Image (cartoon, rainbow, N blue to C red; front, top):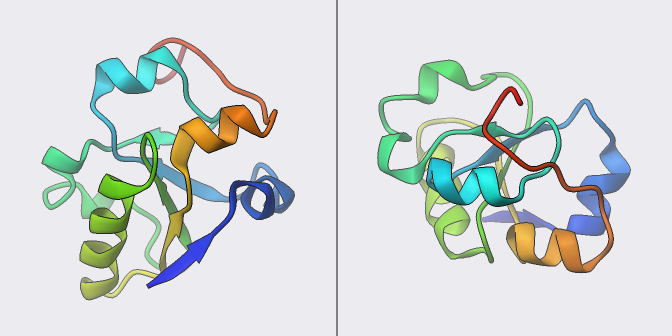
Length: 104
């Protein structure tokens, strides 16, 4: 499985397609600005909402759920990349964090 550090992801800039697979309440607590919330529990029915021809960077709280999601997406033909350490590592590393529900 492909994976990336939070620092390398941050270096990609705002054009990176980031999918956060935590539940909506977790996502609202702290999230990467611009990340799309697609909970792991609904990922299978939401693949049509993901960009099919570019890397999809998958994150969660610390990396467990995102690894599952990235493996699933890769099996569906996506260029899925697991974000090591998730939002916890992102925040610890000093990268920007947004709060509130998607679109807020």
